[in-house]
Image 1 (cartoon, rainbow, N blue to C red):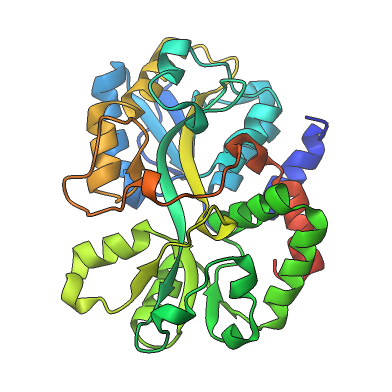
Image 2: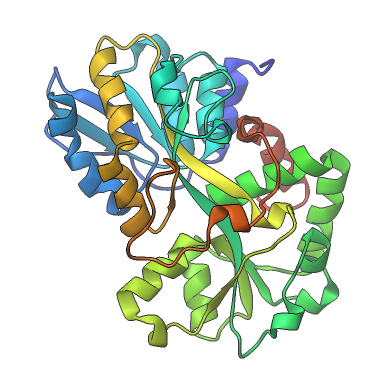
Amino acid sequence: MAVGRIAVVLFVAALLTTSVVACDSAEESDALVIYSGRNKELVGGLLDRLKQATGTPVEVRYGGSGEMAAQLLEEGERTQADVFFAQDAGALGAVAGQGRLSPLPAEVLGLVPAGYRADDGRWVATSARVRVVAYDPRAVTEAELPKSLDDIVDLKWKGRLGFAPTNGSWQAFVTSVRVLKGEDFARDWLRRFAANEPKRFDNNVAILNAVNDGQLPAGLINHYYWYAKVAEAGTGAVRAKLHYVPGGDPLGLVNVAGAGVVEGTDRKDAALKAVRFLLSEEAQRHFADVTAEYPVVPAVTSAKHQLPPLTGLHGPDIDLSRLSSLQQTVALLQETGLS
């Protein structure tokens, strides 16, 4: 990767939200340290069980994936982190591209299909999620639902669509548009999107709530927020529905969360055990049943949520390692007024 370290740090810093890094346990000098870009509410219980899996104390520091990636790059060889656990392939790729993640053993990489690991073997996916359109069926008919990027910037959506401009999943989605369609197409598409005056939200949950409450006809989110809401409130209490965009369009991007071992750690064995644990049946079932994500180990399926099979969704054919080019995406979003 030609991008310099300083540039990457600045770029990642530009993605930062106002969240504060949190330390989840009493600091112990011999503890395995995990920098987690995944939310504590989603994975805290799972990471609490890592102590048994690794046989060592575990200390988890939470923050946004971009935030933790920036901290890792800034700390360099001085970092205390042993494992980087991120919510998107872009942050993993940014850190791996600077040589801050070690190549993983083949027996670890081989636990998941080839599309769910870095080309250079420096990170492996732990779960997957799908970009979807959440919509209010009382405001949007099935015939109106978009089938492509072009459809979503049609004038009929003017002022009727929500998005979360600082959310990592939105930025990863825009990166996929750049990678798959080219810079000029992405710039034109973003300008048309902005001209339609989309509604800004802080996060996916806020978008889904607005759709569900009848305040917004539709919004771009990740699929699992809807399943979490249904699990909490019951199917009858959730009137919002999900639309999976077919045909390999970027609107149906399948992105991943994943993990890697930090280069230079002196706790490499424990770090590898932690990554293996995230790919264990116990962890994969946690993602499938608790967070409503897609397991990446083929033998595990959800016993709680009726997720449509990934193989039937036909997401875009994209090398997830290329989502690390978020720096260019941030510049494009700033240029088009969508940052």
